[in-house]
Amino acid sequence: MSTFERRVRAGLQRLEAAVPEPKPPAARRPNPRRRRQVILLLAATASLLLAGSLVATAGRTPPTSAQQAKNAADEERVRDDIGQHMGNACLSRAEAVAVIRARLNALGLADWTIRSDDSTREAPCVGAAAIGDTHEVLLTPSMGGDVARALDAISAQLMQECLGKEQAVTLVSSTLTDLGVSNPKLETGGVRGVPVEYGGAYLQHIADGCYVYAGAQFDDVGRYTWYLAGP
Image (cartoon, rainbow, N blue to C red):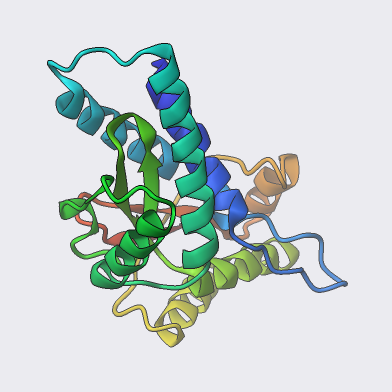
C-alpha cells in the first residue's frame, strides 16, 4: 500500500469517527460502529481515490515539502469542517455539492474542486472525502446516518437473540424499508469476517445456528447490498 493510499484510508476513518455515535441502551453492550464493520468500503474508496489522484497528478511538478505540509493541513481542515456540517444527514449529490462548496468558500479554499462520478449515481445518500494533494473533495456513496444507526441496533439484537435465516432477513429488510430504502438487496451465507467487537462470540453464535449482521457493500454506481452471515 502506498503512502497516499494509507493517508486516504486514515482520512476516511477519521471522517467516520467524527460523526456522532448514538448512546446504546443501558441494558445492552455498546453498539459497534456499523461502518467500521465494513472495512472493505474504506479499502474500495481508498483505491478509487488513489487511481484518481494518479491520473490527476500525472505530469505535474512534484510539490515541495512546504506545499505538501499545507496540502495535508488543508485536507484535515476540510475533512473536519465538512464532517461537522454534513453530519448524519442523508444528502443527495446536489445537496452535498451545495454544502461542500459553501464550506470550501468559508475556509478560503474556493480554488478546490468537487469531483463526482458514477460511484454515487444510484447511492441512497452521498458522503465526501477531502484530498489535499489534488485540492478536491470526492463525493462517495453513503447509506445515511439513520440507516447506519438502525443497523447498529440490529447488529446488537442479532447477537443477543438467536434468529433463523427468515427471521433475520425480515428484520433487516423491514427496517430498511421503513427507513425509505426501496427494495433493499440482502444476501445470506457464510462468514465474511469477524467484527473485533464480538470476536469468538460472533463465530459461536453462528455455530449455534443463529444469523448475524455481516456489513454492507456498494457497487460501482453506489447501490448497496446488505449481508447476513449464518450457518
